[in-house]
Image 1 (spheres, rainbow, N blue to C red):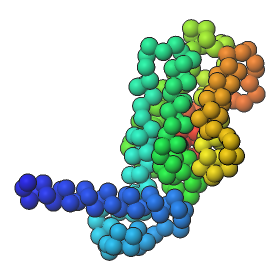
Image 2 (cartoon, helix red, strand yellow; image 1 turned 45 degrees about the vertical axis):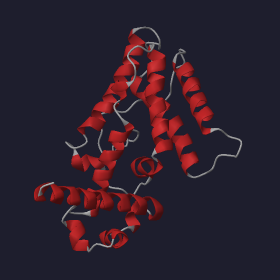
Image 3 (cartoon, rainbow, N blue to C red; image 1 turned 180 degrees about the vertical axis):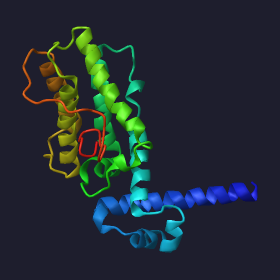
Image 4 (spheres, rainbow, N blue to C red; image 1 turned 60 degrees about the vertical axis):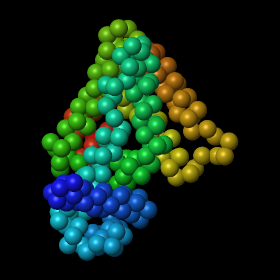
Amino acid sequence: MGIKERQERERESVRRAILDAARDLFTTEGYRNVSIRKIAGRIEYSPAAIYSYFPSKDDIFFALAEEGFRLLGDPASASPALEPVQRIRAIFWRLFEFSRDHPQYFELMFVDRSVPRINREYERFAFVRETKRYLVREIERGIQVGVFPASLNPVTAVRLLMVGLLGLAVLCLSERLGPSEDPDALASDILDTTLAGLQTPLVLKSKGLAMDCGAHESMTDERAS
C-alpha cells in the first residue's frame, strides 16, 4: 500500500469515527446539546482536527442525513412485477424497516426537531425530492389503471401512508408499545387498512401539499421535507 493510499484510508477511518460518535451523541443527548468539542472528546481528538473534516456541526448532520437517506434506499428498486397496490405497499414497508433497522438515523431524520433543515443543501439532497415525486407518481399510476378512484389526491395518499408508519415507528423508538404488541404486525395492518381505504370513493378532507421539498426534507414534512 502506497503512502497516499494509506493516508486516504486513515482519513476515511477518522471521518467514519467522527460520524459514528456524532450520531450516537446526537441521538442520546439531542442535536442542540452536542458541540464539536464534545464530539472531539468522544473520539479523543482535538476540536481543530474535527474542523479539518467538517466545517461545522451542521455539516456533520448533513453527512449523516445523506447516509440515512441512502440507507432508506431507492423506491424504484421495488419489484416492477408486483401489482400496483403491492408495489406501493413494498415501498412503504421499506420505510418501516428502515426505522426498525436504523433507529438512530431515523430519529435524526424524522424526529429531532432541532436538526438543521436540509434545503440548505439543495443540490446535495435532490435525490430526496425525486423520491417524493416518485411516490406520488406511483399513486398516480394506480389511479390510471383504476386501482384507486380518480378523485384521490396522490399527495394526500402518500401523506396518509407515511404518517401511520412514522407514528408507529416513533412509538417503537420511545418504547411505548405493550409487551404483547408486535410492531411488524401493526405496520402490516396500518398499510393494509390505509391502502384499502384509499381504494374506496371516500372523499378525503385533507389537501395535499406540493411535494417539491423544502426544509427538514424528511419526506414527511414540507417545513423540512
